[in-house]
Image 1 (cartoon, rainbow, N blue to C red):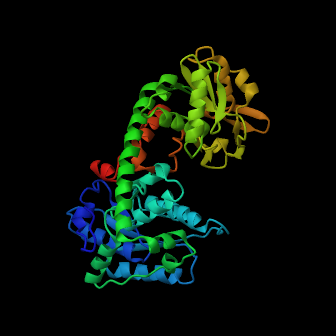
Image 2: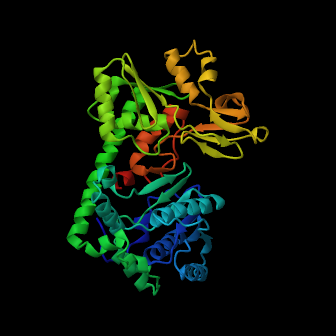
Image 3: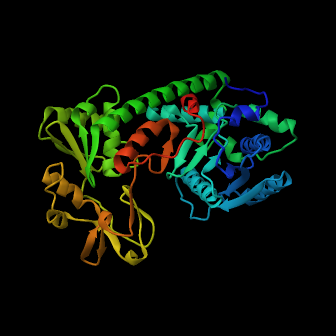
Length: 446
């Protein structure tokens, strides 16, 4: 049940969070009413726990408004007055001329994740409310909805190691204002929240209560559907997909044809084979599947991946176009498919594709796939080079940490998609994502 204007109870918001084993948690605090309410509700809850973690408030100063630095200092002073540690991080990079809101959001995530890692924690709380959920869904539906109709997830894993958790998604903005008012706490109003130049401000001004409630109900239905589809796809990936060699995946054609989850699973496998941060287009994936069912010699490209049918299987590997060549000067993401961490003796070398000539010389006689497909896949795999000399495949180099990334969720994994992402990680690395930061039933509530 959504609260409306009644002051929220901290226990109802945080009792399902897994605080055990965490020495610190981070609260993202801008100085607005929502985030200040989050901060003090969380403090109220933690103070009642016999051995709860310490609380760190973090403010990101985007430097986009003249008053932003002053507001960040005021948040720090308010936190200090109430015994809460605080730090401010500033977005120092050059600001883009277009897409400033999206760029600011990405910068904020990265800075908050950095603060969490430096504090030794993997848990960041943000103050997204039920009103934010309704506004977000209204904006996404105006663009067609799709998977985005599920709205904001209750938690999102950032870059595989930091959870952004949103305990206020079932709490109304007015209830948070009631809480602050009862405690005599004032807050800053961001003028952009009422600036009609921004889409969210325009949507906020147009939403009445009936439309808000309808949107929230629609989001819950879409969330359930997305999770059901995800579980079905996860089952198919777990039972019908195989990593037959570095860079080469195999997926049963019958599984891709399953009415429940088959096309979604194929879109996921396409994304990971091509290293794409986005699912393969649904209509084009469906067309690919129809062609593969009709043509036993089908070979097509989609989402940077080559798909080849051989008997009852689809083989997928990265196409050889637009493969990067980068200096191996430090940890990096290569081609959207691999995270590389070099050892000292490899620094100064570069990372580039293995290439068809090197792949042709490779012995692939014992592999469980056609030799031509194996060599095509190997040609697009990362290798270490010094000038024109190939030192070998990155996967064969001692002292080099090479991790296959579970695209399309390598950077952001919403809790809605935990099931298919887990199946994908098991397929690629034999690993699993970190456990959800709350009891599992909240994923269903999401």
